[in-house]
Length: 194
Image 1 (tube, rainbow, N blue to C red):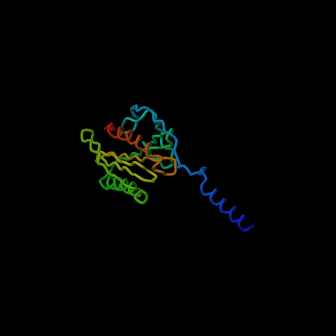
Image 2: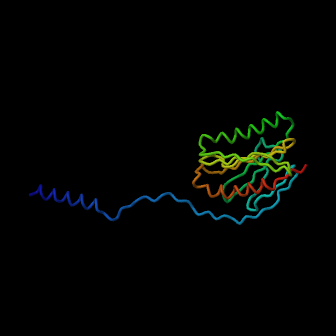
Image 3: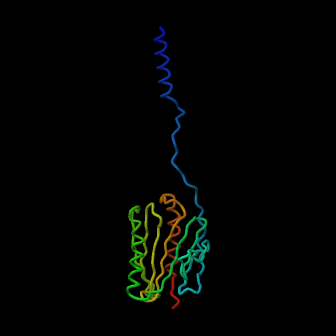
């Protein structure tokens, strides 16, 4: 009799545990909704040999790195915790020019290990003598956009977008898409002063 009661109790406990309606399932990780500002632009004009338009919600500061050279700036996006590093070099020889363009390609291709894809697009504005390559890097990489601009004779300008966060492409993808339009506008309005 005791065995039957014990067996009945175990079976009831087993069925009660299996048919519980209060099942907790974990929810997928979510991200905060991002409020994007209205697109408006202003002109960057300094003592540097170039000018361009950039968004009003960005702040351009002089690069404070100890190795920074004249006309090295950072376009900061504080609301997105991101930064577009901007560097300028004069072109002194064909060898110097080839080294800089190869360096830009190498820096972009370093992301191949973690990138899902790296798309290259030629930049060609002959009326303003602005030429270059734009690298759109998708995946969990440190940089999502890199580019260089040159007149192929005297000037070389490079940009690289970084976020001060651990790379998680799914979470930053909307911001990258938003900022790519600003970078495109910057390139479309870029001019050499001489």
